[in-house]
Amino acid sequence: MEIRIRQGYVVDGYVLEEMVGSGGFSTVYRARSIDPVPKYHTLIAVKVLHPRRLDRWQIRRFVREVKMATVLEHPNIVKVFGVRHQDGNYFSFMEFLEADLLKAIRTKPGLFNQENIVEIIKKAGQGLEYIHRHGIIHKDVNPSNILISYSLDKIKITDFGLATKKVFFLHRLQMESGPGGGTEGYVAPERMKGLSADIRSDIYSFGKTIQKIYSELGFQIPENVKYIIDIATKPNSVERFVDMRELLYFLDR
Image (cartoon, rainbow, N blue to C red; front, side, top):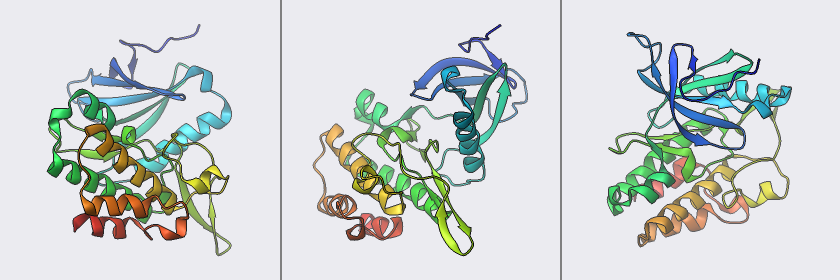
């Protein structure tokens, strides 16, 4: 008998509460521990792979995303705890934050001002710089993949579903997977042409993300931020910042 995943379903000591997000491949629930001593935190997020996505390559991708993310430890990266197979479905367990940045801007614009939005961008950039330093290309940087707490003390990059990791094989740098995927409006031109992503592709997406944040808030863009957007989103990748450290240097100015 098919088990329907919905509010009230219990997996690995957590009961699913409110659905907090849904995409083409998965649904995310806020979940609460039913044990007095939580396995992870009292409140976590549980991502469920859509039943219609349970073919072999989607399952591999889902599990690979979790394995890639569990080793990452940084204050600006969402902590991923693990993966579980139960009742024919696949679940991943991760740190819970209250909203993604785009949702928060649209529903609680009063939270933001010219000063704290720069700090938010900086922290998200530090998270992206960290994963680049560990050989990971995110490939889907956009405001919806930056999670925040409403107190703004937590700003974290999430969603490694499209991410690829550099691997060294026979002394040649290769990629685990090729081009494909991403959010419309944020995908770098070279990827639109079918070329593989590199860190400059993420830098382009980050530039577009900054642009979208200011556009949604209706804030005037400071000159140094205009410069960052301009360089980060150059159509030719070699004209962009060489890495996130360079971009963050100009943001600090």
